[in-house]
Image 1: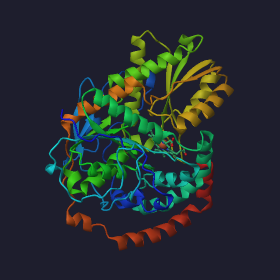
Image 2: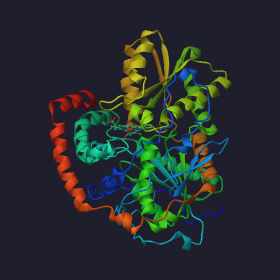
Image 3: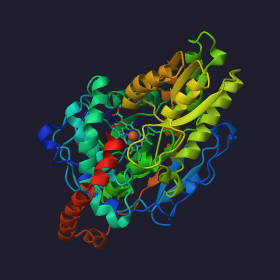
Image 4: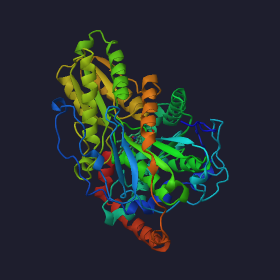
Length: 507
Ligand SMILES: C=CC1=C(C)c2cc3[nH]c(cc4nc(cc5[nH]c(cc1n2)c(C)c5CCC(=O)O)C(CCC(=O)O)=C4C)c(C)c3C=C
Ligand SMILES: [Fe+2]
């Protein structure tokens, strides 16, 4: 593999506070999101008890959202089978970001600066050397308490997080504003309890550095970029830097082991919106690793951490292994075909099989945490199961955060504080928690292998958006819709019933 002349980890593009309102990707992509629907992509709808699930491949998952339109290579990374699937089309729509959004923001990595002059429409076909980029995708988190409400606004303004029926999509922003204001005090309490902000950016930057070094140790020189969905450094900033660096091949690696519409799906859709509208990016060979929960290296790393933590208990064999995954609303799985639940169950199955191979035969449970809002989420709920287990006489429990690979509010506050307290109150006497993988060397080495395996299948994402498609976006019509939508939203949302529902479920 040719080594690129420039290789650096992009990180910490902090914008001045005054720029926050100028660069809000949610605003830029709102129109594109309005036209999306997942309704015809149902894949897996059955529910089962986790303890009775045989380990199996998640058949059919790779067809999710498949269309015959412009194709983009997606790699479902499985180190044993290296299956690859082509998915595209349904994500491809939306207006284009045509200006440099980030201004002159600095990267503390010291190797690159977001905001340098960008030469528009340069085709990478002119490039003479191979420059490989790796884009790590993550959710992002507020760095200060001041960031919490705008971060929540970005999150709830995402139609992959609050999925409104098409007819009501114009309510997305007013609703996001209202929910973010109502939710902010509770979220702030959580962030305050873990030191006043999310550690996600710092840890993701460290992972980026570690992946870069692991790839260099495997003789591949790369630039690694971090793109967050709802906070800095936004995915849009990272992509602009990729463009400035004239990357010639790109591997996209979401830092979520399992695919969900609400996480990886949402980030990929943003990427496709950006790529589609840009002559250079739309021809850039890209390979997206959609999910990687089945990888031997990841499963082994999880089993190592669990085994180590079990040894801390006086009677390790009596400990309940308790997997706690981030939940999603049931409708994602049952109506929209989100493979998240199936992948989660299969992942747990593979980890437990690995432990069994090592002679560890403990009981285990899977439950879902962090539900928000007045809808049904995947069950069983973590808090309810902890109480039940305590009442049933379980005395020792090891909690394992399974849908995250970094420490963040849901591990440090929700699990370590709220759930631990609840468990101890419910009769569980010995509590332990497996740390998130963060920069565990075997895990990072496996991510590097996933990149190496995905690289050969990189292919061009799409053709640039045509003039007629761009014309579809009529700002006047959109403003009128927003104006009347906001009035209607506030009338509806301020009704006593709605206020009651929000108070009960968000505060
Ligand atoms: C696999 C991981 C995640 C899934 C699936 C997911 C879905 C999802 N989340 C919300 C609502 C919130 N998420 C919040 C923060 C947050 N969520 C994840 C991961 C997943 N979310 C991460 C990594 C973080 C960032 C944590 C940090 O340290 O900052 C928040 C804000 C925190 C809070 O107030 O609880 C909300 C709200 C929904 C609605 C959803 C699926 C539809
Ligand atoms: Fe979340």
